[in-house]
Length: 79
Image 1 (tube, rainbow, N blue to C red):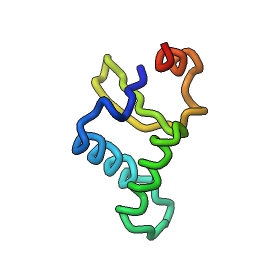
Image 2: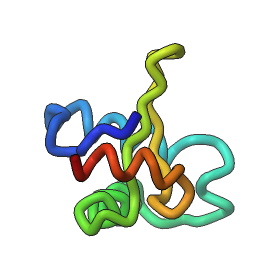
Image 3: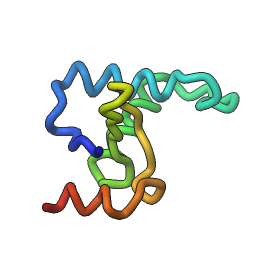
Image 4: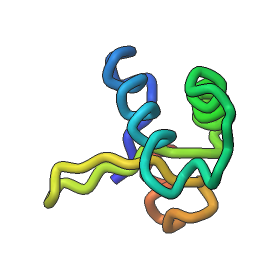
């Protein structure tokens, strides 16, 4: 299930993005400041290049590139 970013409270979205950009294996030695990485993800969400995926079974959210999610999930956002 995809969650449109505008449905999340601002603090919740910020924490989700910060968790994503600080997760082990996401920096690959990148010394870019946290705020810059957060801004990059926000832009990707705003442009529709990234999406928020929610798994109801595990009650977990994560970020993914739009091209990596099943097309039928994207259709649900349009309907």
